[in-house]
Image 1: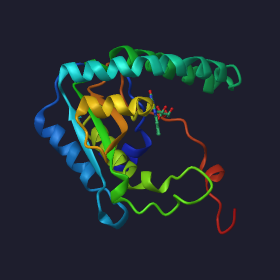
Image 2 (image 1 turned 120 degrees about the horizontal axis):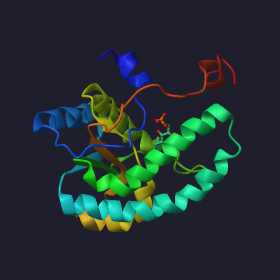
Image 3 (image 1 turned 90 degrees about the vertical axis):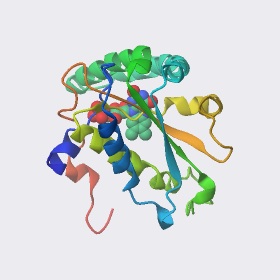
Length: 211
Ligand SMILES: Cc1cc2nc3c(=O)[nH]c(=O)nc-3n(C[C@H](O)[C@H](O)[C@H](O)COP(=O)(O)O)c2cc1C
């Protein structure tokens, strides 16, 4: 599909059918991830492509309590939102509830992992949270999401399972220096799937020549 169309309709799809995905399609979307740039081209990330029913169930069991704890804050924010934003946020919340209860049914959960020892993290000494390391992982995540979009597959980047890093590492047999940072359920959409997105206008996001 047209790249701009794919980008401008890539939204979180949280209701996924359990129907299997062809191996060739899975290989294509995984390959798209490998094309992403990384600092020094070290490619300090890997994907654990989970199709095993028990392991997917274990992830869902770990995910749900964190979604449930996240909900009250989300609900509290709803009351301060303008009407149109509130309506779409309520839909997203319902979809989030669905995902938390059904994550294990997705035919594929792609767990992106990273190894900080393979990264030159140029902002790690600054007195604020470091983000540069993520720059060598999340472009691959975005390539993967766009490739799923291109294949008609629903998907959503989730990070709540980072609260369960130790348990996820153990479940997946991850080596000591590797850590999970994105858990992406993938499957054919139950409803309409990807579509229109709500984002700030360009003039709110970009300044020319000076902040
Ligand atoms: C860094 C990051 C972490 C996210 N973590 C979660 C998550 O744990 N669970 C979830 O349901 N969605 C998660 N999302 C999806 C966002 O909530 C979603 O992309 C955002 O609300 C915009 O919605 P839209 O993509 O449908 O337009 C995450 C997205 C990003 C970029």
